[in-house]
Amino acid sequence: IANDIPPFVDAHHHLWDLSANYYPWLTNNITTRVCGEYSAIRKNYLLNDFFNDVSSVNLVKSIHVQAEHDQTDPVRETRWLQKIADTPGSKGFPHGIIAFADLSSPDVEVILAAHSRYLNVRGIRQMLHESIVDPNKPRPSLLENSMWRKNIHLLKKYGLSFDLQVYPQQMAQACELINEHEDLLFILCH
Image (cartoon, rainbow, N blue to C red; front, side, top):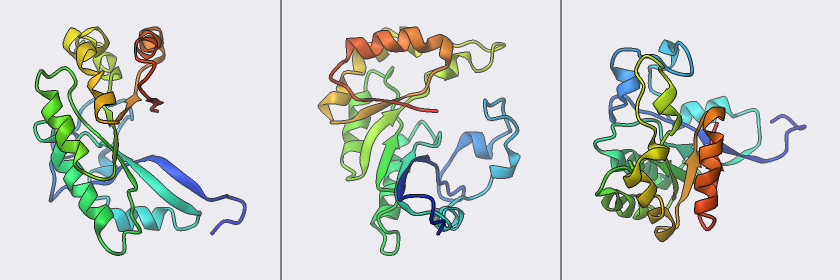
């Protein structure tokens, strides 16, 4: 272990098992992504891979952030991750799970309640920058979606934070959102 690196928490990492779960962006055709060309990561990345990659540092805990799993079954990824964390030998990794829920959905509370049944769930990430990722395929901004704005308050009810992933040009709207929900914990993501 590198002596000059103090113990730390990895606050944002991903695991995926392409044979057990469905990640459209990893298993379907390669699409335009902010991260650029990503064919090299289109393979399983499991807890032992993670442990191997961090073996030279003093990592004491980690937070798994939703990895764009199948949005038609977002709780499946949470269930899979909790099972990993509960497995002997995992050392509790990942200690925290940031799950996905579509806050623009009228029945999102069912999903939030289901995520909340898992001990390690700490928050929700729904990528807000996606509306401007591809200028050739613009999408309406979730920050302007009335159902999404109405439902974000439900996170407080379930004791969940919100991982705020926006581009700089969205920061003014993001600040308005934060000011409207001062009792909700926002995590600046990426």
